[in-house]
Length: 177
Image (cartoon, rainbow, N blue to C red; front, top):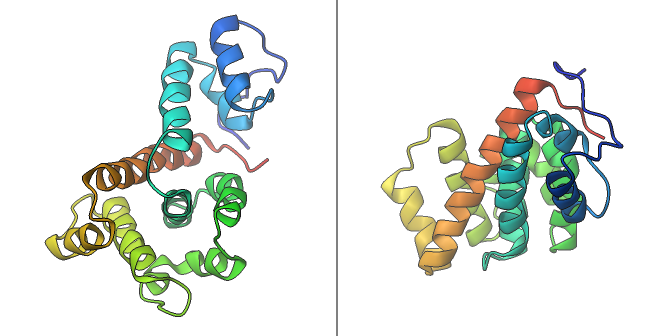
């Protein structure tokens, strides 16, 4: 149960913000949107940030979605995993990889399921999500794999953004749809 009731699924006002959220979502308001819309200015900023993160980055979608699903798993944000399992699969991720994310520590060492770049991504995700601090070794490992400052910034940003998302989801009890 959510800790605060969702706004109505047929909410229309404020029109500009609700319309922008609906446009990004293909016309629907998800439970997350219906919680965010308790604060239209917050929903507007969130929609802009998440729209960019989801559709305007140079980071490969598979790495983006791997990091997002891993954050969801580590933080026990079932909604986040549910929303991103499909995009992860669409980007080339497998069911076995998704299942392995139930234990991200083991997944980060699993060379049978995850390539070197994916394992480095998982180690970065674990460090940022659990400890905030990233060791020199973990940063060097992902830097060696991506070798692109824009993509490094984007990956760190994706992990940071979805930590924000998962903490919002969990704190407010937003349920999977």
